Length: 158
Image 1 (cartoon, rainbow, N blue to C red):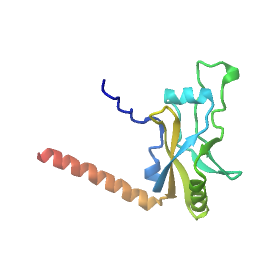
Image 2: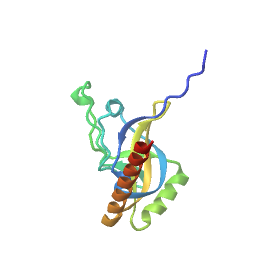
Image 3: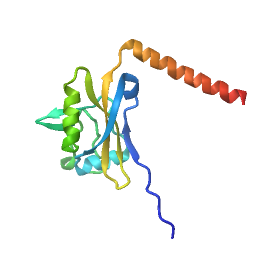
Image 4: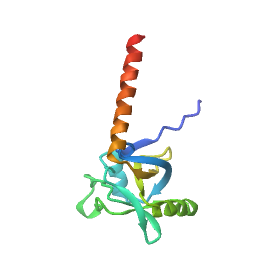
């Protein structure tokens, strides 16, 4: 009997604009404390982290403004609050590193994606981000267009 390969991480929500709007300096994985209906709803794949950010509250790391819709099959009394702050689990050493980075000017924590690892546990990929100016965004757009055109030319030439 052949050993089964671990399945790749299953993405539940992704922030596609993060790399366009910010310079991502570093990324790290954090655990996410969720209720039962939040996990069920995340598995449905309708969550949104486009407007979300991570920050400190009472010396702990939280995910703010992440939208996880209500779970349709559960009763009204079992539902969760859709945009509540959710605690992120990181090691103490990582937390102190993040706290130092947040105190710097212009650095923020942006969730890049929410996914389930191979054990079925919900995780968040958090990026240390510095905001881009308008001219930086235009430059990124030009670079992306050039890469696309270059790939098209190479494909057409053979």
